Length: 92
Picture (cartoon, rainbow, N blue to C red):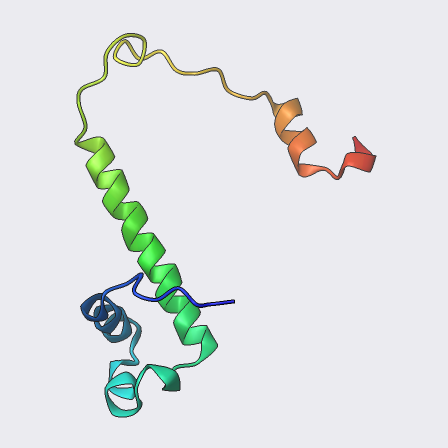
């Protein structure tokens, strides 16, 4: 199975390494020196930044119209439904 390469730019990876406190290790020993945990933390942080970016761009989207603009909301699940989702099937 081949690895996917190039998902994150080198500059972005260095920025993440700096934010997470192991940039010097990468500069000294290369990317192969980071631990699995450090790599996982990089991915987690990249996902957080992407989600923040998407949330920011979604809030700047076109104004809402219709029911959403009037303050109407989608129906929510009742307490019983939420409870069913948290209990194992055999206990429902």
